[in-house]
Image 1: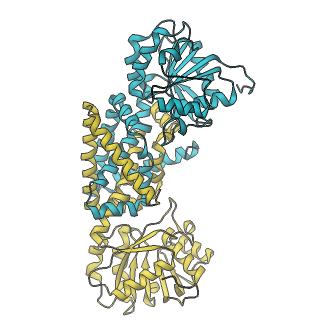
Image 2 (image 1 turned 30 degrees about the vertical axis):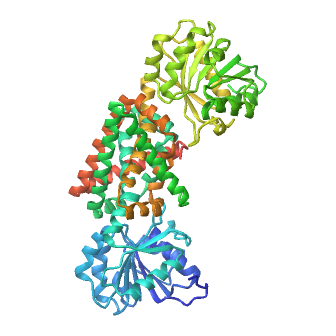
Image 3 (image 1 turned 45 degrees about the vertical axis):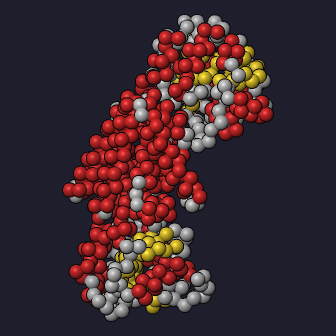
Length: 300
Length: 300
């Protein structure tokens, strides 16, 4: 399945709407390898972002108007915040060329699909994706060509999405460096709720809990954070608007996972209060077991 | 305050009871530098540990009986699990030399102090310490001479502990490589509850929550753990008996911090359910703020 670097471009024109961390990384990789599209178009409503993209020279054309960017594209990737994806999608769908592909890179899937569904066209295949890559930085300067190397990109096509379009988007992600998996959208949301959204929610929350402590204790939290707290804050440094949108857009799955977690934490609290040693050891052993599985899986 | 490497030893004989990760690291550093004691004694009730310490050659004398190890020591450091510290301390106190120092390295302080209090002698200064260093490994082979370099060691002397003895133990920890701070025992327990014990409890719990999911989702948790879950499991790999003892011995402070955390998590859940965007963003901003403080503090 390995393709030669001289593979011909998948698309004539690729439009990236929202060239932030993810979008600008797509552009950089596509420009570096030349195997994704013959023409790269970047579009952003923010003049400062357009100026920066122009200075970086990572697109052949920079547009202010999504309609102009989408009109002659063979593939449009919406890289705007989760909360704006359906709106921008509905705005550009009417002007897209028949047969062109619409894709997006949001971290949640079901709510985006539900919101954009009324605007979808039978002649425009819609291929939702979720590249599981990122850093704590954002904006066009934060991207880099190797961001997706060996990272997962999950694809959640709809039941009626043309399989050929899904295959084309999958090939694009392979060329961007990623491993891919196709998944049901609702299942995607549950998996991401437990592996990503709940850990982030807990990290943000414990930072707030620490911040509410008396001044003396709070300063010591910073001094002695190496003892575990620091690992939690590493993932708490992400973009607030992005995470607000993710939490609100994956509300159902996230609240279910949080409820399960809270039940388990309450059970642990009760075991500690009443000295139930076997229960406590059993819970810790399960943590170690999962840790070992991760090591065998080479993820840690 | 920097001392020359040729400083004369602080003690004639130092006895380490329980030469595991922490205890064997003390012995290794003391042996390497020669500035802590003229004679190093290791003591363990487990014949396999004694054999290994003998093979490693990190003590001048290896004893099976804590009474024999403690009888002629100028300083005894209890490096046994938190749940055994007061018991072993009460056992050896009657045979210790007048003026010798008793210390220990448990991760909680108030419950150890309460438990050992009836056995304390006015002529034996008791200096509880908590070296905040460790790895996920345990036993005499896990130790190394530089384990404490630039790590914190918190000292929680009692109100009537001889300040000269506290100063001597503090100097010992400087020579072991650590930074030190003196702290009230109850305050220590609250600080450690939020910076270390609560993060570990949450990490163990989320591993259990993930483990309870349907088989398909559980396998995907392992595949996609890089998205945040992995950072939580890094600290979930620690020794179950050690953590059981820590949780039970710091019960009050830990349950209070957990209760505060649960209230905060419930408030976040409610904000997500009702779409309170300002609340969510405020909580995330606080996480970022603490993260920035950590970076400025060079802890991250």
